[in-house]
Length: 319
Image (cartoon, rainbow, N blue to C red; front, side):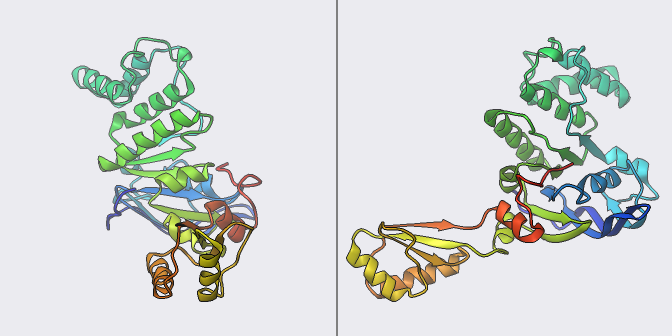
């Protein structure tokens, strides 16, 4: 993950949207720094799709102020469109065309000249490892190849901000990790990624910051580690070589629990560096030797359960 910059690619204040009596977004504030990955997550009906549609100029907000890549969303929508790219959940490639023809179509739509267009097509085919398949019909591509081509088509216009809606849905683990590497490469080159995903592991691995939307309101925002520390259940697992060391440690750490019959103790804590150091210092002062140590913190699914009342496998999607 990247180091966050101070300049926002997206800055939204009081974003509102309603359909008759149904309020979809109820005063949402967002700040997405440039050259980072920002993940927007939440249960069904939380307002994620509406947020992306507004920010990408597909629909209008009922209220609030938004700037995207330095442009006012309400008064400069054309400038916003010129600065962004959108890769939707469902592939936008034409299966009857070849990979190269799909990309050429995009260069034509972007009004690139013949020479520049050819250069862009060649560069993107190489970048996404599609050169060998460039002359083949997209109908013969694997799911991972189609998603790479879809994202390559988005990059024809060299967008500064890219909206990725479930970019790895349906992909096998290897293809998913290839896409993760591509996303990291885009951010390293200066692009900003606004991600929605149903895979919490994906958000955990890629996102610099995560915002959790529920019922049209932001209920939490922070780094993945910050969000995990919002819910209880974190502990340090200590394993000892013999019962004597275990007993000595239990005397030093009265708050610890012994979860099973092996030589382990669970010490409640958030896994922070200072807390772990203090724990080890206490054991060292009592001459207690720890065989192994591991940190266990709640995962993002636990965060969802605590803040929305639903497990991700029950409710959380990006619909």
